Image 1 (cartoon, rainbow, N blue to C red):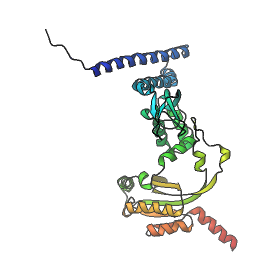
Image 2 (cartoon, one colour; image 1 turned 180 degrees about the horizontal axis):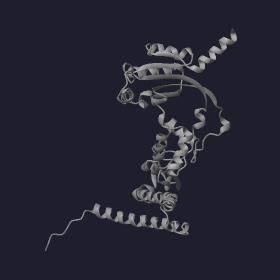
Image 3 (cartoon, one colour; image 1 turned 120 degrees about the horizontal axis):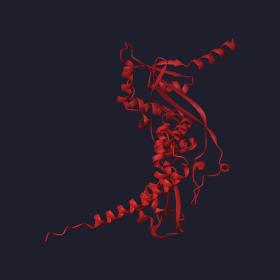
Length: 345
């Protein structure tokens, strides 16, 4: 008689869970096929028609699959009946199960999770959100990361249009702006600037086959921009966390200053690095100083030229940090000053 094979309990449980998940996923796919059948009155005959039909319904399928997998993986957390208050030692009983729909790159995902509320601390929370790694708001990290990559390359309006065309999802330009500010909070110019090696690579690509060193231009300027106070962005207490009402705050104009380094290649500009913030001139000077001290700009490999207007605060920092640079008053301000001189004469 042969020896009996020993099967671990974990393996049995895992196999049963996987069988259950497979069955649930098949049900999701059958539901999607039913939807597809109702919308396909006549089966499409060309590849563009097929891809367009599948593309229009793909989020219903992928979002449903995600819901099923999340529910299966976190069933224990979803059935939780007690939780500790995050602000006091009280043990709370579940109040109710609340649905929350979040938006992801694979489509909307509807989640039912237990909700707890501490009356003493006046705080409500759902441990399921933390277990699943959800972030505040509807749009989750995968959408935010994709949007952040776009807005670092193109303007917000263009990013919104491209995001919708490429993903079929909506991400408003204002929401992109708010999200980008949240992501960038606390970053310094050194966190976003390319490395010296990358900058040298761009310079070398322009220097190939040329006798003279390429021209690296530094532009500095400032402008007033409309802003809103932090109180307008803050959410109010309660489950829905609505944004503060418009009538409760008043915007103001603040001075945004920044600089940009770029290389000249004929009629084309080759971007190197830039830094624009709502800041005063001393903060801008500190950011330029960080660039200087970090050695990101190989001044020996380029002909540095500073093109700015006539503001004294600009040239103060230029003279202190880049005294050897060629200083140029930009054409439009120069023409403006010459016109004033002509009128005076």
